[in-house]
Length: 223
Image 1 (cartoon, rainbow, N blue to C red):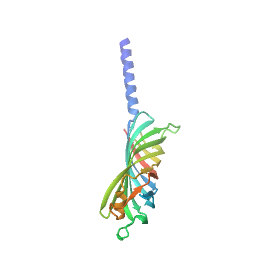
Image 2 (cartoon, rainbow, N blue to C red):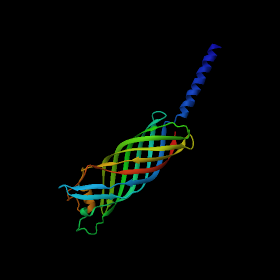
Image 3 (cartoon, one colour):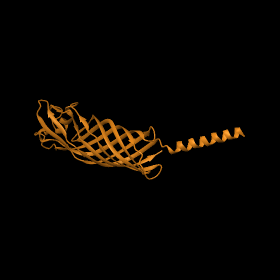
Image 4 (cartoon, rainbow, N blue to C red):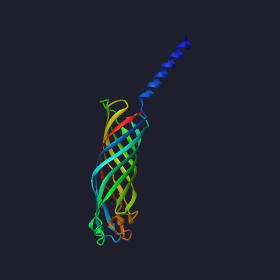
């Protein structure tokens, strides 16, 4: 009888452990879309002359993320976001000889970040607010009049959001993030080629952040 009780206790313990393991969802995948409000990129010549700013239009964004939960409240997330937008060069950087070269150009920006997320338990079971911080890189892709080039810079992000669980495996997520990119003087020919000067002009970028604010909504899947 004693052995039966021990086996029964072990069986109940095993079932309880299995149920607990099933309730804890370790992985989360999300697809997102929203709006990015973009700041300008400051430009400066080698002799210190201020050449103005590359204006970047605010536009929509799309993205995807994959998160691994370390526990019920903390997760590490791999995040990608693309902004399809347009840039506009300052007049000081336009080649007067190449009058047909437009000031505006196509600009795509890819952001690759690793985010740390911390969630909070509140009294409403289906709602879970969270804060996040991330590090990574932003890549600028330019395609205009034969110029097809890209350049990457360090970027980071901080933000907060709210998750709403429609089901144990599906939910909705809204997030606001500040995500500046630290633009530096790593490649003077990048903006010169867009301007129509080729690689001959001496232009460098100040070490200054391009400000961005992202407002996104997502659908996520837990498993």
